[in-house]
Structures are given as structure tokens and as C-alpha cells.
Image (tube, rainbow, N blue to C red):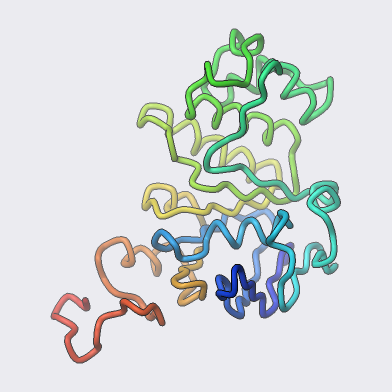
Length: 245
């Protein structure tokens, strides 16, 4: 069953088209990946789905659970069960991790248990969500809050950013837990390791979806092989070498 559908979605920022006639469907309870090089429009797509200020004036439509959310505010979209985990998580001076998690998911959340699921000890509950935490620690705490709130749809923007190798498996385990809880996950990434956590992938370049399908179909993008693309830097087809680039 489809939970999210993009219908000819286009977005212009500062007089430039950033997203161009995007059409895509995301299946409920699945893990999807949106991949592509820096500047492809991946994060912009996530901001547009979330309805952030400056990203709402789109052409086309966005359907969620069979209803248009084009005119809804970010708060209204969040109430419908849509959430976004930032590449660089926010800091909240003076707010403890415990209060942050309880604000996200209610007072019934087991703070110690949810922290353990992302690889953090319960001691973190009394720490502040501020500059004393590393970017990786804040990212884990943000992911813990998402696990606790159990949204219908979550977009994780570069979930491996700022995460050391030893912690990466905990992030991947959390993605699996979200899926097991019935959450639809969209991974925004240019990482092969993150891509491999998905079941289906979309390849973006220059604001356009240029390919989609199984992860295995998209993996060659990460192996230096050129994919169908309208980017201004696409090589001349008459000069393509034996490796396809």
C-alpha cells in the first residue's frame, strides 16, 4: 500500500528550479533510499515533504495516506505522523535528554530502554542537549526520540553523518526497529552502506529522479558508472569509455 506519493512535484528557489516534475511512490512500512551526489536535491525533497518554511510553494501535489498535504503546515504534517531527522541535529540549551525524549513521545516512554536501543547509557538522560554532546551523540538522541514517538513516516537525512564506525551498526539496528514498528523510512544519503539498508531506491541528479528500482539496480552509481542523467556535467556520450563513463 502506498503511504506517500509525489505527483509532478516541482520547486523553484531564488528563481531556479531545484526539483523538477518528480513522480514517485513510497510503500508503507518499507525502507526507501533517495541517493545521488551533493547538490542533487535530496535534502530539498525531504524539506518539501516535511513542509518547511520556504519549501511549500510547489507545483504538483504531495499525497500522504491518500490525502493531499500540499497546503498543510509543518505542524499539521507532524500531527499526521510525518517527521524529519536532520543531518545536523538541533541543540536545545537547558533541556535535558530525558525531557527532550518525554516531550517527543510522552511521559510513558522508558528513557533508559530507548537510549540503550541507540547505543547510549541511561546516564545520558540527565545530560543537556547542547554543545557538550558531540554531533554523533545528538544524532543518536534524535533517533531515540523518533523510535519513541513511532511516526508513520520518517525521513533520515544522512543518518551516518558524524557517526563513528563502531556506532554505525546501532544506527542500522534502529532503522530496522523503525521498520518493525511499521514506520515507513526514507533514507537521504550518498553512502553505499546506508543505501544497502533500504529495499528500494531512487537516484536523483540535478533535481530530477533519473532512475529507480531495487538497491542492486542503483548500486552501480556508487561504483563509478554513469547513470541516465540530464546534469550539465554529464559526459559526452561520444566520449564514454569502456567502463561506461
